[in-house]
Image 1: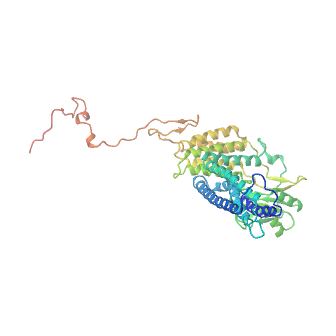
Image 2: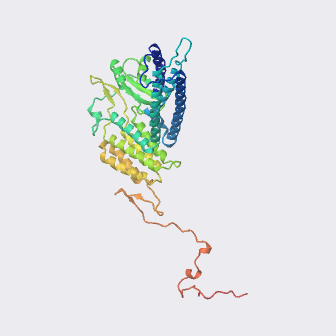
Image 3: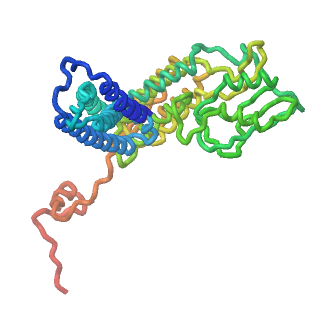
Length: 457
């Protein structure tokens, strides 16, 4: 969006500024371009050629980084890189400089009979300043590219965005039951209801609760939402129900569907689970045999620890939304924090079999979450503790021994050493017969100096 707007602005500026200069040439400004028409065309041509060449380089570097992010981390991270202000600003300044230089070239003409020619000096000076700005943005772009390829920066960025969204969606702390304190609603037997089906296919990325509340209050109805943010829906599937006496018209269905955002890809608008999903994907991909990078998994777990430690101290928002008069008008399904805990702990430990680092880090995270968690989230966290504490994934090879987690202390306990069976010795490495015989005088022992000879028949 930003590059497209910048191109339009550059095109308009390339027409307006030379036109104003031609109407009132005046005295040339200080440090303005002072060359003739030929020099002006040459300068503008060099600027246009250089900027479009570097624009191709910037675009190719962007594609390379997108490919690396897609293969190394997670394909769900591409949208975050494309939304970067540095990438969009770099493409915008290079494209706008190219368009501005080409547009200004049209207003440069040589001396003719009865005409002294015209050189838009201010416009050429502006083009030169834009080139210097392009150099600055190019250096910033290179630095951003190198920073985007670092695992720590990528994981930290996702963790920070997820934590900020979690603070926005779950602002209340404590162990308070919001269902019991606020207004509630439940349908009575026989109440009329009508289903509202969606006409789109994709993932739910946001709900406009204010629009739903205003519509329900205006029509004296109660809207119950059957899906939560992040779930996948298909065309024709019921997404909400309307409880009221009158029938729901097609116009009402359109208004209700417009209050639901559906996209092909999940976003971080209201979906905290999408941020958790990205971190879990990075951890799982790092544990794959093709990558085998448990250190990256540990970094993803540490960011999950930061997000989950905040969530286990929060209160889930009430599913009932009331109007100004206190009447419940909208009943929705907020994302459950216990689902985030189960997704983070269970899935990573499932892929961590045979790793030495991951189960220990998971165990430390679970122990800290149990300390910080409120009572309602401790059962899910305790389940993760059993997974990490008794998981067969905590294994490491140390002279044939395998450590096990002690249920009482939670620390790895080494079982007694058991040597594996030795392979048979090759014939040329066997001990002499005298070393394999018993002590002197024992039954069946032959003297070392005597040999048994067979008597010929």
